[in-house]
Image (cartoon, rainbow, N blue to C red; front, side, top):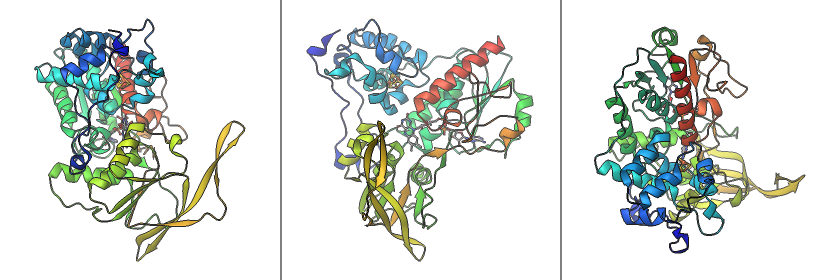
Length: 455
Ligand SMILES: Cc1cc2nc3c(=O)[nH]c(=O)nc-3n(C[C@H](O)[C@H](O)[C@H](O)COP(=O)(O)OP(=O)(O)OC[C@H]3O[C@@H](n4cnc5c(N)ncnc54)[C@H](O)[C@@H]3O)c2cc1C
Ligand code: SF4
């Protein structure tokens, strides 16, 4: 250990740009055994491990780095699964630069430990050796309904099944996974990895009801009577609109509709798609991770040009920096400090977008966005994608359960318990659109509360 002066930080190797533009396969390769050992060996085993605090799940990071460095991969696998419901997924998709790696003591100059890459390696190599997550027999006479199969629901199911409690998961879509399946594109997270996790839960005894929307296909009051507790993990996937003139034209799309349509097509292996981007000029409005997923999907769909339009400067972009770098490598053009004014259309089809240039002014120690005078200009466009964030849907069945919501439609909880004493909630529907790892924390902690009341 403590070999950070001997070895420099290495990131996971990426596939060649020209190759990766041809498909939706993952961009990053999994570390080899020797690379994972060498990179784990850099860890200082700090007395107070800031990485552990920086990880929302409080994973035992130094412990599994030590076991990887000491060539004890089975113990590393057991330790990394202890606190996390799906380490091989989070190692791939967490914005580590602002979480565990951002908090690593070596991040101040030597280069943080490549925690995400090592985490993915530990699980993937363990699966290759035939290891898999362990679950006990389902012995409890209590049962829990989980509404929503995203990271929050999967996490709650995992930690309940680990305690031998039977779980039934209801999902309105045709596949489980929530945004892991129908949001995050395959080049960041291969869909077979999500399917594999779900299969392990089914092997552990979970019942999964797909194409079953609670409040429509099944009455929520029946669920309340049938089960001893309910976990609500319905996400926040209602895309925000722009309120721009022209946004209702037929070739303006919300990011989530665009990404979901492409992923549904990818599942069928067909080439044609109801949203045809090929040879089109695409403008994506927004600067977060969802915008990055839209621009990178557009280049893979063969767009003529893809521009990302963001109202602030590059350093203010809210998403993961590595995804911006990946997008640039893949040929996406970035236009910073612009604010859309209106979408221009002809025969209900987009032809261009009018934009103002903006500037960031420092005022009372805060940065304020201002429109520059006489700065109006036009960007040609055939397709516009709005990646402006998400809100909650607030389904009617929440009222049937007497569940209180806040001003933006989020489910109000106290320690994951809603205003209904049988119903717990977490993930995006409770904290607002956030991250897979924080949804995983909520599912785990809510499961712990449910286990407590059953005991
Ligand atoms: C494009 C995109 C990219 C992202 N990239 C990343 C990333 O790289 N890293 C990261 O950490 N996070 C990322 N996120 C955020 C992350 O995906 C979410 O924070 C996370 O998925 C939230 O989990 P959840 O379980 O709360 O909700 P969701 O994943 O939204 O799952 C909710 C599920 O509930 C189902 N549901 C809703 N209502 C009902 C009902 N009435 N009956 C039955 N089922 C219902 C939905 O169909 C859905 O499957 C991204 C988000 C998007 C949109
Ligand atoms: S779950 Fe995310 S934040 Fe935690 S150790 Fe893994 S990559 Fe880092």
